[in-house]
Image (cartoon, rainbow, N blue to C red; front, side, top):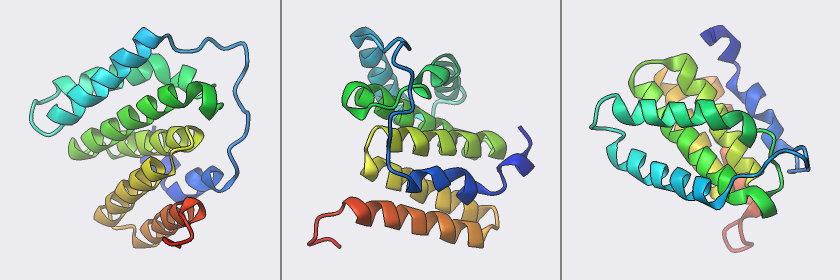
Length: 168
């Protein structure tokens, strides 16, 4: 993917403003419990090693995403698939950070968008806002303050929408 295709990150994330709805196909296979456990173990393993073990964690995470992201993108029911969507969101978030660190900007943005969408589909507004905040820092670092502001405002909007009255 060319970076030009990903330049307008706020537009790509605009679907997060819409209510979560049933988009997935009911006939698509779900993730087995063993697959979920393995994905969650990969999340823990990769988070522990993402900054210091060279390319091994990035390769493992991106390989998992290459194999499973199409399946995850067809799931939408947070009640039935929240655990799988959340694990996918965390792995995509890790891949985004690792890609950014390796200066693979196009991959970092692609994984950031996937992570935010999966976290949103999982109904995890805290994770969604955290992912958007990381995207904000990436945009600031790449010299896109206007886009960074839009993404930061989206993160705030999502967080406020589900916050308790005391926090609003």
